Image: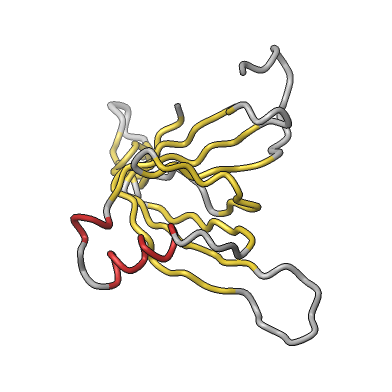
Length: 147
């Protein structure tokens, strides 16, 4: 669904798509960014002035944290096991983080290249607590593109 001109979006829900499998129940996505090195070129101009030019350098790899409520879905755990046991051929995957609107239509996709799970953290377990149990998956990636 395309947004009207000068209109912004509210991230109603988020999803992760890895190898065609979609996980739509993600509550929070943090740390998603594209970044690159900056190269400083120091030189003198023909009239003798010292100037510094900034040039784009190599793209940097990134990390994103995905948080969802704890469910019976084991897709996070299976992916983490592949990376944990060194099966990087199976662990490195292409995927995307998808932002959905209130109707469930995708608004934007952030494509991740060679992504793999760095860690999986389960929220605090407290007897008698009424808060939602969560799991946080930290995914590292080599490159991100906005689709």
